[in-house]
Image (cartoon, rainbow, N blue to C red; front, side, top):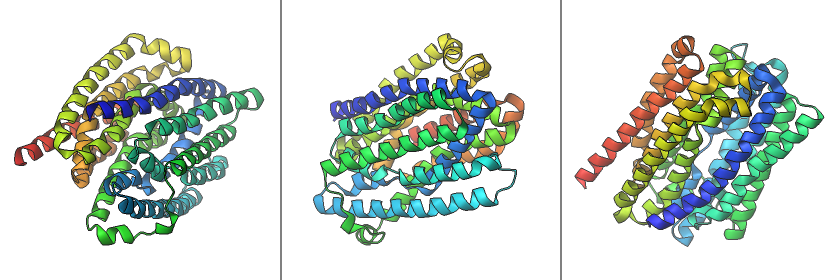
Amino acid sequence: MIRRALQNTGWLMGARGINAVLSLVYLALATRALGLDGFGQFVIAFTFAQLVVGFTSFQTWQAIIRWGQEDEGRKTASGFALALDATTISVGTLAAALILGLAGDWLPIAQELRLPTFLFTVVSLLAIRSTPTGLLRLHDQYARAAAADATTSIMRAVGAAIVVAVDPSITAFLVVWGVAELATAGMYWRLAGRTEAIHWQRFSLTRLPGGQEQAWRFVIGTSLTGMLTIASRQLLVLLTGAFGGAALAGIYRVAAQLGEGLLKLAQALLRAVYPELVRNPEGARALTAAITRIAIVTGVVVVGVGLLVGEWIIVAIAGRDYLAAYWPMIILAAAASLELAGASLEALLVAKGRAITNFLLRAFPTLAGLVALPWLIDWLGAAGAALLVLVASAVSVTGFVIATRERSGKS
């Protein structure tokens, strides 16, 4: 079980590695082509779309894995996931239209960018790929998922190079990012369809909950946790722009792009480990302990490297204008290290059906931090926003440790 989980993580990280390298390419192109303020405005527009998607979407891949182990259950779970995705697209489109149309100057998106931002948001909603992701992971097709994931960064890097050569603008970069999202979603659906037929005929919001009384509780719990992840990352960028201006949002985004690489590893780890915990509950604790030890060592090494060469990396990629991102980058790398260490514990809680507990352990520190955000930004700038993430991660991971130990003692 451990070997398969690590192998699956390896496939996910292969794609993450490609994405990490290419992300440095398109980050360098965008920061230098748009400038500090222009890049900040682009980041805010992009972040708004990610927020809408995050706050209206469901973690449908987890539902497919939980109830899709048998053929008949998989068809019903897939139909439920498809119906949830359709709900996301409808609700998200309406929410984006209302917010962008009715929001005043408090929303840090310039009026001339609101229509492009809305169109990019709709594209991002249409590109939701949680359902095909779940089908691929259910069948251990992590190599196919890795190939699909790599599409995003390849399209962004190539598109960004073309935009810089032709006519760099915020709208042009949004177009490139939108095309990349659609291309990635298309790859996911194509590869999932080759793995297993998509069960459109089971499209229903009621069939699965009718046979699984815990279905809505599980879906709501995992989705709320996903929303909190968005809130602690994407909402933070938007609020940093609102309280500190577009340039500060751009600086924070550069720090996050460079410092949160381990967070992506943590997410890959959770996604790879979760199916194994569902399939083999008896070996869950041994797998969790082994993965956690590996994660701790990895996190310490990465933070150490960031301290040594972080400034050089920032100057080489984004330029000296973004040197203020150094300490936020280090703080975010430390937070991502904690998330990496806690990823398998979080997966263990969710696999045991304790999605609501997981949500609560993330909710309280995140919400408390967001309340303190204006003061933190006024005091420390972008580093204050990063500090919020570090403290919230520390509290949440501590909660995961306590919750899993308590559960072990009762069992």
